[in-house]
Length: 144
Picture: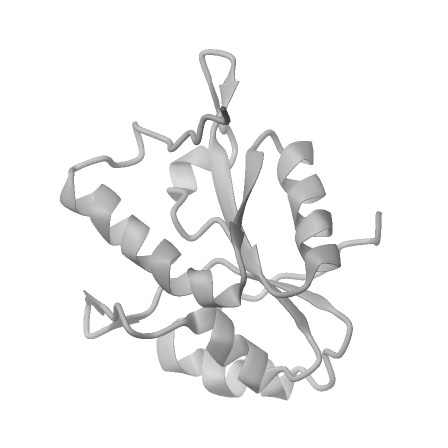
């Protein structure tokens, strides 16, 4: 597995200037853990994943963990069952690498499709919040 280094999670509009300031990220895997909020409101029609792809041409962008509450990042296993992390991106190899990372830290990775599915993952977070399913209810996708 490739060596994973660094982290970047600038807030809101700062991403648009912070990411290009990092220089050429061609071939690097970037994990988009963000959700698009403006003025405290979720933006259902904004794909941060696709924006990051524009700001870092050539980077291998994967959406993931945006629906996982911070409290669950360090302990994704509940009663012996690994919580799911949904991953979206256009680069199959990058998704495989990120899925391996997810397994290494205790999550069950689920391929949610191409980068355009990031919009749906943003909506999922809103649905979970609207139903009052917070940090005490990590998400699990059951395979059949």
